[in-house]
Image (cartoon, rainbow, N blue to C red; front, side, top):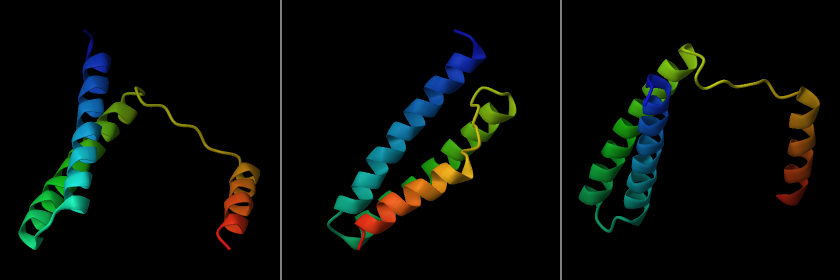
Length: 83
């Protein structure tokens, strides 16, 4: 397994952890449990962001700019549905 695949796997695992902590935060029944999950979620999100930044710096997580007219089209579509 090369470094790119290893980082992809780590990022996927971290995203899964974030999902679990998010649900734990939402579903917690006491403030103490809520705060514990929320803190863990924030730490996991920070780690996920760091992993993403390292992958993007190496060109392993390429992104592209969306055309502005497409953004406007989506805003119009979903903006009218919200009313």
